[in-house]
Length: 342
Image (cartoon, rainbow, N blue to C red; front, side, top):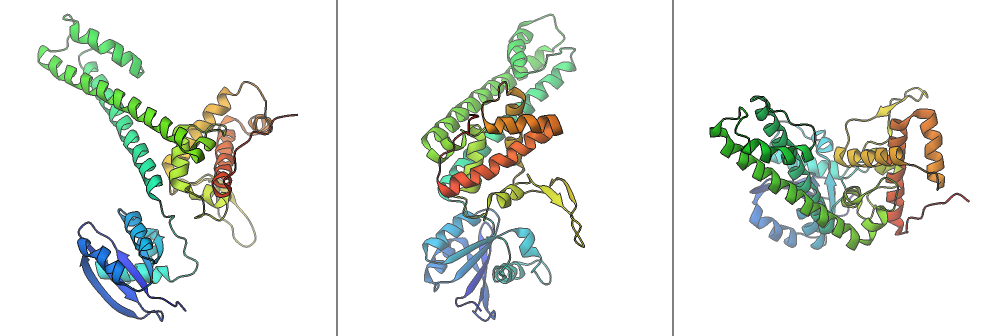
């Protein structure tokens, strides 16, 4: 039996619903609070277990609750929904969060510290700019094709050809459209410069952060991968071992076992962090294809794996190994050292 109250919190932008359970799991209250009053509410409560559903602002409020002396839990929405009874209402959601928090074997979502969220925010902003840059470039190409103007693949070709297209009075691009085309071209240049600026900021962040800098020493891990690993793992304490973290981001095979018969399938598509997995596999694939000489025992292992299973599986295996190594480096605070062939 719990020795403290359990507070289940259903978060929203302007109002917050709280359900308080006694140590004997009896609901004491279930009420709505204004967002501006929630911090005061947490400060006035006796030491409790405060549980949140993983959603927008959950990490902010969880850190605030921790600073008030409370125990905290952040629970995946999929887990909370299984404990909800009746219709989906704020009251039922808050009660479901409290009920789920009292279950001993429910896995929690790891709490992100301010530094982790700051790095994650920079990476996501960069990702958005890259997507906008790609979207706008495809838009420009598509419109120009309607006028019989075709541009070769790649951003370099696009940046090189558009000024010539704007100045060419003999092509079929209408005069009325040229000002708009120039406007989109200028926006594309701005996006290119903004992405380059964030790339430099990411490199500087990694350089100044000892843990991130250490992660980039691994094969196939660059600044973006290091930022994503650190913002997801932190100190690594949320995962009991490297394999659990690898499974969390979908780098281990799916398993469908029954009656003592184990059946392993491909890596799962339903994972907690698809972006991290994608970046790690891309980095590993780049390393595998560009590996020119075998200087370490990991290189030796990779060569044998490529011969046996091919480049694709070798890249995923390297990403899996890097994730487990990253967990060990961050939890133990050790330096990554490549094991050279004697």
